Image (cartoon, rainbow, N blue to C red; front, side, top):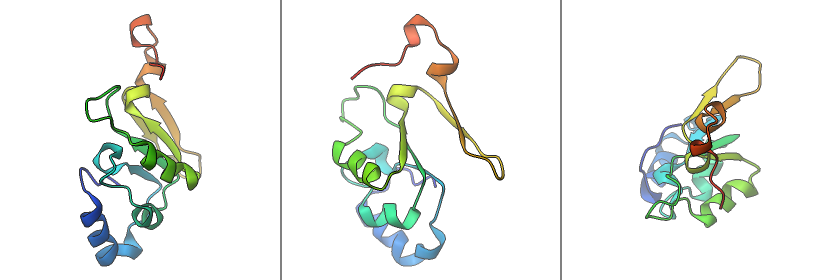
Length: 117
């Protein structure tokens, strides 16, 4: 599911209109994981096993929100952030577990090491 920069109001509308069709294995966190999105109802409707947070490391908006992270964690949803991992790719194979690759793991150079919090 690639929801882009939607916020709570749009999440509610999607649930109203398409609740039965929203399920997805992988979710790109709406609005970079900000407090304006990723409502519990939306997370429940999507029911992902993996969430990807497209948010830069130490960004000026302070994405991703701790509250939002906790919502996904409480549902045992595996999460990855581009701020820590760099570019992410997910490979889907029928009948197999999802395979994640991160740019920083693939291109290990001293200047691309994983940032620490």
